[in-house]
Length: 241
Image (cartoon, rainbow, N blue to C red; front, side, top):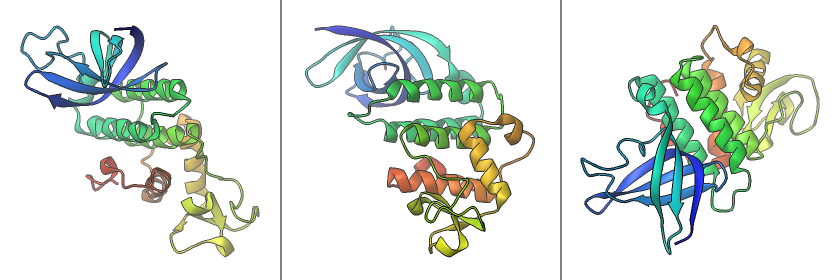
């Protein structure tokens, strides 16, 4: 079987038979890969804990007829160790992998940019570089922007005016004026707009030091669910969302 090597982050896994596991990974150069890790559930597996969610690994993968097969996995960064020891970190790491799993499909073209963003976000999360919520919300907005869904922030997404910008509407494309709001629009103010911009830009000087307003989080959630066209499970199991 032909083989290829790549760097990857494990997104999720599920059992296959008695000893194997299917591993879903986001790779740097090959997009999203679904592959079998044979014998990984045995106590003396040669893979150890390297193929668990949030692990960053260097892999050697053999092409298969229906599923690829992981023949080697070397740990690069064990983000999972600190993330799984803290509920807040775990919660937002789950949000990240769920969102990128949805964004990157079989025909997705820019997996290298999504991969770079994901490892940067997981690294920041594992180091507690900023508040977990802020890292998670910034990741969601930036991942969606890479995918082509950038909200209009500085003028009305409908008419283009710079006046009376007080609503956020995913279906309209971002911020709108009062005249162009719709029934699903979220009311917001200048501070909310500035925070959304900071999340998109990764402007930590603006973001650090205070918790995100509930309206900011609601805007991120509505933007994400509108463009991914489904509820995001990781945004619905906690009161903070």
